[in-house]
Amino acid sequence: MANGGASGSADQGETAPQVTQVSLSGDSPCALRSTGTIACWGKNANGLSTPPAGVFSQISLGAEFGCGLRTDQTVVCWGANDFGQSDAPEDTFTAISVGYDHACGIVTGGALRCWGSDSLGQSTPPEGRFSAVSVSAFYSCAIRVGGELSCWGIGSADHHAVPPPEGKFVEVSAGHDHACGLQRDGIIACWGNDDHGQSTPPMGTFEHVSAGELYTCGIISGGRVSCWGDNRSGQSSAPAGEFIAIGAGRTLTCGVRADGAAVCWGRALDGVNTPPAGLFKQISAGAVQTCSITTDDTLDCWGDNPQQPASPPPGTFTQVSAGFSHVCGIRTDRTIACWGLNQYGQSTPPSGAFAQLSCGEQHCCGIRGDETIVCWGDNSAGQSTPPTGSFRALSAGSGHTCGIRLSGSAVCWGDSGRIVSAPDNALYLKVAAGQEHSCGIELDGSIACWGQNSAGQLDAPAGSYSDLSASAGYTCATNFDGAVTCWGNVGTELGHPPKVALSQISAGWTYACGLDATGKEWCWGSVARQPL
Image (cartoon, rainbow, N blue to C red; front, side):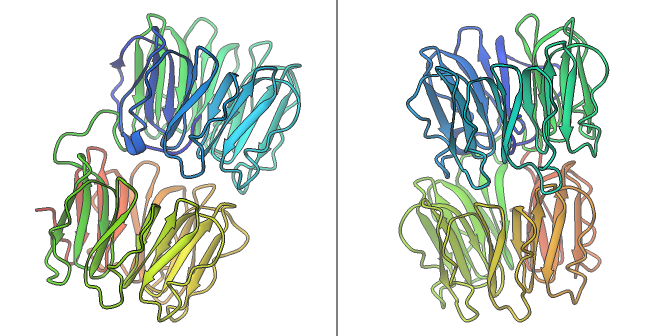
């Protein structure tokens, strides 16, 4: 599995060009045609669905980036490159696999070579000669030429210590925090997290195996697909028929039938087809104004703050973040443009190229291309004085800011009255800074919160979540089915989000907005201004 990236919906029977292999970036598919060319469809974040030309023998997708093995055994990658994951080495390879923000391959001769993020040791492979490799979010596994398994990096905080089983293997597939291998006798062995039954394979002999986020699929001898584990989105309900290849993603599964046709089933939250015109890809809610990035990468804003005009600058953008009375966005050339109130300099961004951006009440912070953080605007509580080091995510709140280091640990700075440091015994995928509290999604999908708890904003619900956003005394989060839960100072209106599946969520001062699978915006709460 290649973790992370887009999700959305695909009906059973949806087809793509005749192919020989299929790969998913979370849930955005690419297929290798019988001619050796690549066809991609779905969300085109960072150009993921725009593969390079040429003839390939293998493809693999990660979180908004992909790599292909050309027929001359060189590797080319495309898409996101925040950690150098798209800068493939110039060696010749026999196999490749792409994860969340790193990739590994077997070079000619059998040694392993990895590139991209190495924050948890996932790009530091063992020595030796190998025949197969599979990469996940924060760990990798490979099969030695003798058939034994070796894994490195970590899985989730709870399950990373589980070692691979003994035995002789011919195929291995790494999921989010579990992995499965196909033994020489056709029996599948799995290890790691089994909360959804994803590590409990059925009896029988198999030809192939693919581990998804919370589930696993395999091709039984004879061509039929069997899946086990999480099936809340239908991703484990495989269609009938004979298959020759299988790819399990987050909540979407795709396979190649014996006649070369590709078929997908389950649900991809961000859609596997190009969204219709007028719909949106990203959303950010400010105090009394909301901005979205449309499918043509331009901005659309609505609201009535006279100091924060609803007419954004022209041009194309990859990210937008709305503060209390100002907005900033990252242009496609990676520079930042801001507009609105500027009494603290919050609308005067620094020059240079940026990979991420987050605006708080009267300040903003961004992650530069070298992974360091720079902030601008109000610094009365130290919220614009970030620590040194390399970061992969950040969130700006009212008087404080939080970031996730490359290691996965979270750190917060500023004061905001009662803000406390993030727990130092956990690793995080995402973090959200509110007014006087913060929350983060841990590697196993659970939520931890810290800071002030005057309105129950630290009382996070149980379960596994994919996205979250915090604001003035409350937080909202979406689980892997897209269902929204809000807690803290939510009152009557904020506490009743729409009963639709949302792929992205943004919490404003007294209202929240989100995007559904089609790109449609949904807003709720007091002052929940709908799109114009």
